[in-house]
Structure formats: C-alpha cells, structure tokens
Image (cartoon, rainbow, N blue to C red; front, side, top):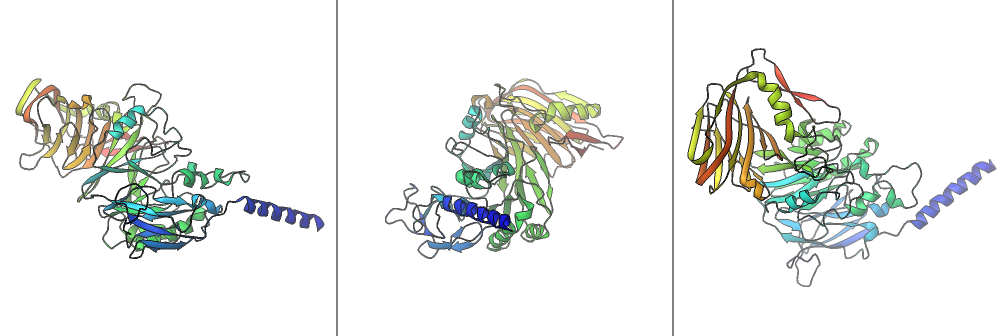
Length: 519
C-alpha cells in the first residue's frame, strides 16, 4: 500500500513539474480584424475594423462586431494536451486576403487583448488558379532552386498554394515564395513519442503549430469556401468533426466547398461522410500515398499529389463556373538529378512514352505527318477513325498564339498556347515565362470523351470533354507565322477485343487503373 502511495505521489509530482514548466498562455484572447490600408500588417491609427469576420480557436467560433473587435474564450481541445500549442486564427471572407500573419499561437501571444489580424482588399473572381502540393518530407528547401524560380515567375492569377501535410521541420516555408502557403497537418507533422519530450513542442501538434499554423482553418476566395482539418488520429476525430460541423453550418447553402486534409479515408465516420454529402463538397485535396490519383472519398472526388521532392511536382487547379479542372506541374521528381525533366517512373508527366504509347501501339491506324516549316494560317487533317493521338513541336515565332483544334468544325475541342498560358477546352493553365517555352512540345490523346495531354515535359492533364469523335485535326497560327518543327496525327483503330489499357498509377502499392480503349 505504501509503495502505491509513493508511486502516486511521484506521478503527481511529475505532472505538477510539467505544468509548472508549461509557459503561461491566455485563456481569453481579444483583438480586432482591420482593413490594412497601408498593407504593413500592423493596426495603425485610423484603420477601420471589418465586421462579420469569424475567428476560431479550433474548437469554437466568434464573429467580429461592427467595429471589427472580437473576444474569444479559449476552449479545451482534446487533441492539444499541451495548451500553448493551440492557435487563434481568422477565417477571412471573399474580397480580402491577409496582409500579415493570419494566426497566432497561444505561447507566442504577448498581449492577449491585442491579437489583431489585418486584411487587405483583394480582387477575386472566377476563373482563378491555385496549386496543391503534399508530402515534401523535410526536403522542402533542399535543391529546389529551379522550382523556386519557376514558381515565383508564375502569373499573378495563381492565388495560393495548399499543402496537404508531412511538411515537418520546414525552414521558413513561405519566405522564398511569393505565393501564400496554407498547410493541412500530416501524420509526420505530429510526433507521438514513447516518453514525454523534454520540450513539449517536440511532440504532438507542437512542431506544426510552432511553424506552420492552425490544424483547422477556413477561408473564402471568390465565393468558394476552403476548409482544412486534421484527419490524423481516428480515435481523436470527434473534436475535428464537431469543429467542421460548426464551420460548414456558417456557409450559405449552395456555396461551393473545397476541403483539404492529409489522410484519404478518415475512418468512415458516418458523421464526417454526412457532412461531405449534406454540404455538397465539390473536391477534397489529400496526400499521404505519395501518388497522383483522382478517386473518390465517399460522395466526393478526391485528388492527391505525387510527393514533392525538389525541383518538384504539384497539382494545378483551375477553378471556373463549370467546375475545377486539374493538372500536374513537374520540373523533375528526383531532386538529386541536376537536369530538369528527370521524372520518376511513377510521375504522370512521363506516362506518354513509357505507358500510353506502348499500350496503344497495336491499335495504331493511319499516320499523317504535317509539313515542317513556316505555318501561316492553318493546316487540317481529316480523320477516318474517331480517336486520335496528336504529337507535335511548334515554335511560336511571331505568332501571338498557336491553336490545335480536334473534332468537328462546328464545335471542336480547342487547345491554345501563347507562351504564358495553355488553354484547354476553355480552361486556363498558367505557365511560367521561360525562353524555352516559346516552343510547345505537345502530346494529346483523345478517346471516349476523355482528353489526356502532356506539354513541354512538365505538364500533364486528364480532362473529360464533350467530344464524341475527332473527325479532324487543325493546326493554326494566329497573329503571325509560327514554325512547325514536327507534327504527326495518328489515328487509333477500334479494339476488336474490347480490352482496356493499363495506365501505371503512381501510387505506393503499384496499382494500375483500367482505361477503356476505342471500340
């Protein structure tokens, strides 16, 4: 009995020592959300408050008053046994963007009555483009010079980057980049240690909130609601689902919703799936599998990305009134390779030569080669088969843009390129301006209302299109002459055996997905 008592006293003493070592942090936080007129991130005299903006501590929400002021009482969160690691953040509305830090960690709060968040006016409209990356695994700032230069050269209509986790121990993630990074927590961003760490910031969510921000966040852009949650530990998901239900309850019915979290398959919790269905979530961005894949999470399309090792891969998402089209940018998967374009065998950017062409070679029909040299006006090839593989290399020269049209003359599928943007079926995909991009190196496969496209050895896209059959391919130069370096049009015959091609799916388990061939 005495030994049990001594043990209990020792445990109580350890807990008391731990609590004593924990830095003080506020139980109540107040401040103001203000319109940052001079965009310096600081509340200056005369700057007006912004009413009706939500503030969250990851458990509850409050809304700013008419003068932009708020007060939030910090709630207990079972996923944060170390309270100083909790955060307070602003859920900024459409038409605004943070002018400085949009979140505050409780351990860093010096004055609990003056936790202010500045917003600047921001022109937002559909269409716009944002990027998605995942799973950098600490290599984020290693060897990414080319990716950094390319990213910072992206046109201004790229709004932000969402990172879906496993970014642990980053070094000044946002500083080299012009884009705003918003990160969802991954399993490697949390440290579950066998023994309590000497520094609580070395365990649990401490490392993540110390460097990257809140584990639950939301904001609006151009009328679309973006929300990120911590789908990590299934035994602790109740607090996350409660918070998500409160967040989505504030969204007006009919608002488009995009969600981000690390783990595909959040345990099949029926409350979670019901939230996805009831609020008609349009798309989920995920990670963890180190794979580019487009699948489903319950009732919602799920897009994951290949793991990001510099020079890097990332998904590009083009948001329009019609939906969200997605592609892949890659400047070389193996960061130890010095040459750009050194893609992994799992990267979709190299599927054209290594997967697609070998699979469909047995179905090749008539092949036509367009005349090389100056292109003024247009050249047209009439097809006898309804499906087609087009491969070409065309230099812009003095042309303002080059256009490839596939399909009937009345309503063809159009692919246009002007050196800065690739427009596919009316969707804009921005390219960074580099001298090498004055030439478009293009592979297009059209079959069964599906377009698969590769461009310039770093862009890939799959997209459903309304085209039922090709009928013709037209290459045109607009605004001046272009130069055709090479151009072939390969007809694809029907498959008499009704078979499907196997695209190698770049996932950790080496799975394949079956794609119907022409029949």
